[in-house]
Image 1 (cartoon, rainbow, N blue to C red):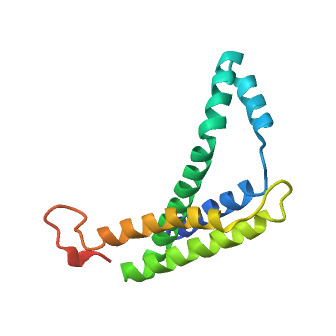
Image 2: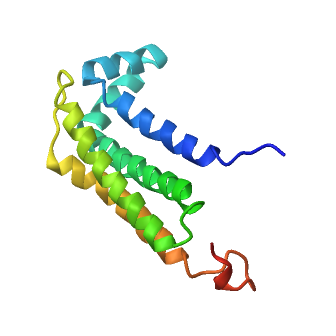
Length: 153
């Protein structure tokens, strides 16, 4: 039978690599508007630019929260196979996400037009923390109604 145990760690590693690669670039608003203009019409671009100036920060920071929540969940899934203790796996995944957020912000200090800041580490870490709480809150629940919670491993 084909061994597929590498899938979870591989998916986690690919997600982490994706975060790293996207941190290597800076896209300014002029470039973003140019891309939107090429894909749509000028009226939409005008409305998009107004929206982005007012709310773009929420989209970007919201994506960071989501990005690190997924990072935490994928790390947890990779660890859970070898660590039967759910809370320990969740804690290690959370610690890994926070350390990765710190290293990512530090890495951004070397990228032109980017900077690293504690605020972004906290935003990234908040996504991982939400995911860790979610995992821990589900750890005592049975996966299927009627199934005992003791089968969680």
